[in-house]
Length: 517
Image 1: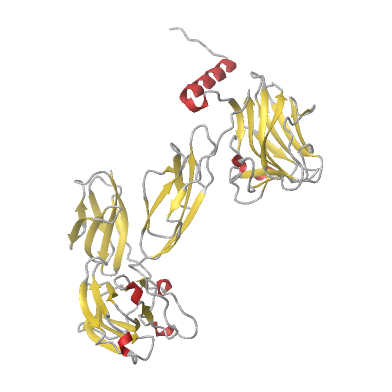
Image 2 (image 1 turned 180 degrees about the vertical axis):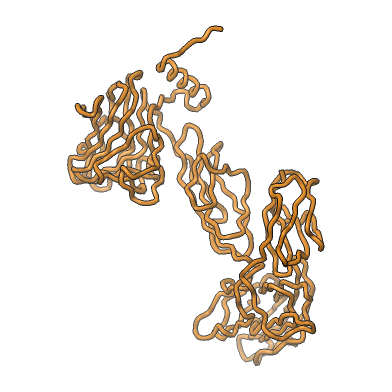
């Protein structure tokens, strides 16, 4: 066997050739010996305390005052925006990089993103090189930067004639009390290719408060880029989870994403925060809107315990307004935590004037559901049932014990608006109680084992009986339904992938992720 041993320079040459072959878009690419983009600091950090270095084999030091900062907005050089940079804004500040091995290379240049004070042309920034950290040689700025008001953006600059030595030191200092910021340093053999930046990902929806789980998509307009994301608030990197398809968000979470592509600068980080209110286990709240008194108007969609659609704002007396313009869409849903008994509520017609004929064509449906999907009518009310002189009281409705959702929906309306107030739902107590129901914010504790699974899943809910199970895909389509007893299920006949399992218990509904592998 013949073994050929390559020296360091030959190995570097082979690596460069491999890179050129592997990345066609960089056929004229430079060999980059060192690169530093300064990460994304969470706050201004002293240079010696910063831990987000890209090249951890290189020593970075300063005099204790030079710091790493969040990037400023850029103009003229987009690569420097969205990350961190080193600020040198005093004559006693300096920043040094050491332990760079350039012994096998010639025709070396140092490139960096430079942001300066508007009146500067870059001449007060001193960049020096040394082979021993004792004798320093100044590297002169090749580029002429504009000076004057309005020229303080980022620029890509070049310093030539970087020495070849086994332990190169680079030092950056300032001759004046002006601002200089450095970003995207690169030690390059030959001429640098100007790289574009991957487009910042778009997260849709863009965050907010929701009353049901959200399907979140992430996209970038840069073709061929790979998106990485986190859902724990941390900054994503190429070591994070790759985005492979829509995400399901069903609890408070912050989604962050960035995109990378060979031959381009990494994108900026996109972020979206979601608050998903658990519609199956809500806060303690008597189902009575009359507490909303005074001059303030509450948007019903913000009232804990209810979910509304196109209702309009509630009136100052606490009632909820169903607007004629949204007939067929306007709905109010109350979510219950246990078996209900009797239902009562008040309705009033508002004609907008003294003419009763201005309130016409009203059809208000009251319905109940065990799962929020299958509904049965409790009452269908029309304009003849609803007074325009004052609230009419409706009671005596007995709800099914399995009901967990009660809905008021405006099916039709020609003229006028309808107001709903004083909802009271009694807990079931043998013959049906009449005390006002309250809603618990503590969801039942449900465990699945094993998960991920090859097929069989055991369901644990403590002492709470599991009434039914529903398997759904990520689009919410029902795939299979099981009724009690539900202690174990088998999904081995389903393809590998991610599913949602809706667990209905006597204390409410919990939706759990299931991985079939």
